[in-house]
Length: 255
Ligand code: SF4
Ligand code: FES
Image 1: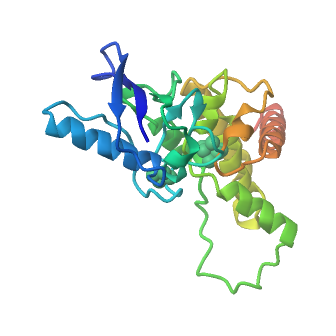
Image 2: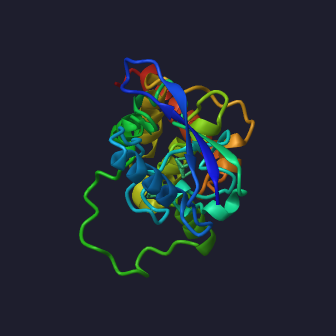
């Protein structure tokens, strides 16, 4: 395959970026998208030019680092991660535009790499269970209905890639945060800290500068792990009930 690539190049956070055009004429349809970029980088290095920085790690759809905005869609034309996308999804002779995630809370570090530590800080604010739960219990000791276990597992499938933020016109992180809140709120082990967790994670999300949710559903449509919008509804319920109980404690003179 022959392809033309329009790639965002940016030296660092402070410098202004721009698109640069490259041609590749030895692309196999069976290459993954990232392998195609490896070939391009190899060519650039052999020519003595600066290679293109892009994030990747596992290359098997698990780590969530391969954050590329391809032809106007996060992770490209398929609902999968960029590392699981293959060149056969494009046509011979096609021009492909590659950009970094665009969001105020995800500043560009270099070329196609953005800083997603805002997600880490949201997790650190409350996305964990800190109570002492003792040793590993027998699998049948705490019975969890299959439907609930499946819902918690589906929420836990979020890989923190940030495609939901990149897809949203408001750069909202609500799908990500709601998945992280849901996976714990649904299970008995996550209940002791559920109120505090919802309040702290939502507060951190706002502090990081992510936008509000206006229910367009672009996040769900582009999420490579099919995280459902129902998690956002659950997060809103968790947050609302946490706010009510904080208000009750305050009005009774508690802290
Ligand atoms: S909700 Fe989906 S799109 Fe958003 S970070 Fe998680 S896996 Fe990625
Ligand atoms: S490189 Fe890990 S999900 Fe793509």
